[in-house]
Length: 148
Image 1 (cartoon, rainbow, N blue to C red):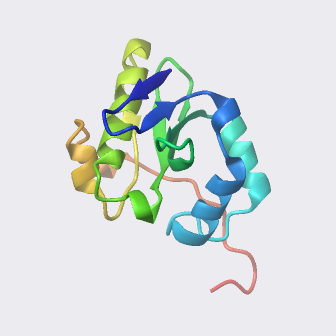
Image 2: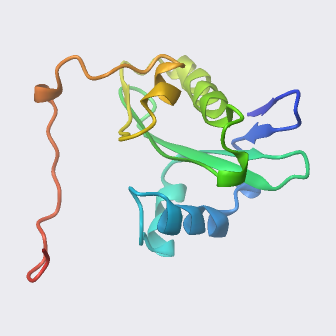
């Protein structure tokens, strides 16, 4: 899939256009949810996901998002990131809207995401708070000995 904006930005799902080294740098150094994430983990996550990259008019990648899905019953939108120099231009909302539209033909009954600070971006394209958050649970690895 390729989508274009009038200002020259382009969204693509072409894996050959994805700059995994750049995505790793963004996530591991600037994304609160992924600080310190290893390159190997980023590479594995990319291989197991639907990936969306936004490029500027010169072809440089400026944003990223991925979806983990079975293609039938569930999707998890994650690692949504817009490079600081390109924030404030509506790219996040545009990208997430394109992700929503790309997933629509799958007929997924639910697509979830987690955010601590970008609710307005996601609400613009239809995401809402969980109607019953008490029904959700999480399985996290136990902390290792000596971890605080």
